[in-house]
Image (cartoon, rainbow, N blue to C red):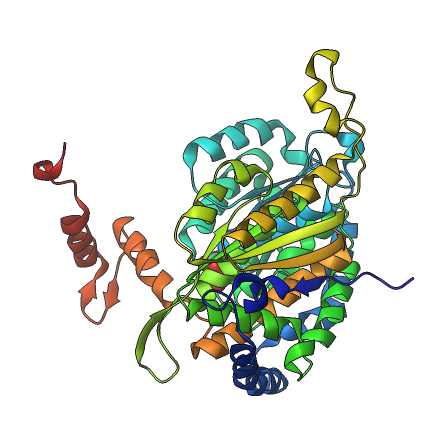
Length: 476
Ligand code: PA5
């Protein structure tokens, strides 16, 4: 049976629907096609030249094989699986789990196809201590997957150091070895050194693949496979999308259209990109997209070195929940947003709404209807209302949420991001602005040595404190 394909519906960004002032006119569309077409070839060439190795992840069957072998080795007796990571080393794991496992997975053993999964992507002591209290007497049946490409990220390193100490105290060095898998760079970095020293099981973050483009590598696949997600289906879905987003035809390439439409609206006063899944399964995909879009496209300098300070602001919303929180603003506030709905035809469950109580005949219109049809009609209703106010709307249509369609979605948005980077003329694969805050944290936490040239971390820390100390004169 042919697998279903996700589709991009873009009619409702066109001037024919929302008017010339806010929509894309035929002439603008043709100009976008002309501008984007050579960039499709450009990113295809970059891929062939080995510059964007994330593009080849869906074909790395040996990675899936390594993951499966590791799962076979560690799954038996594992009741709790814990991911320690942040940013690209966590958001994909969370998104896959939310999309492809039932929402009560952790609570209901009958809904589980693997261990409970926890992903810690923060260093909140109250949250982490509460978890450690809970897991302490389950350590024999717990596996920790510490994920860090660089191995020096303070959040992940400190979580790991707490867990390491706990495992060493309770289970000794063998316990540490048996209960931790490190996912990190193949040869270098602090986590690789630690893993070699402690003889930990390891998986690799492939060379040249940045965190936010790494979900289809061992970074995302291990926790998914542990929890019973069909990782072959994910990779097959991504390969399916690869064939579509590699097409050197603007109108037949969904990533080209998506990137070009986003670029058009950014350059025409709509600098915010709202992604609004009408599916709880896809809600954390919005978080994953937010990081991908923000870190990749928010750049001060273009490729020629000119200061441009570009980048659409990604905003996540959830339908129907945020109809009761955001839609007032979305309709009547500034017309500065492009909306992308995620719509799912079949939600995997049918749930019939019960009869209306006799005293509330006005609710009769809901009685006997499927809850999914309410959700999908809410999407239509919201889209219709936004269109009345000339707000451009895209929809990504899913027949259903499956490993195959989620793999397509991930690859679709990754390649959209590459193409948007090319349209903006920036490098979407680095994140220089994240570094200063990281280094500042190192300094404040007492790192020794020099930060730059002969400027020490200690001096750096003093300068940071001078600027960020609370000034009583400005305290009310
Ligand atoms: O996309 C990225 O590169 C970042 O979000 C990283 O994933 C994040 O900073 C974590 O880095 P690391 O995996 O090196 O700990």
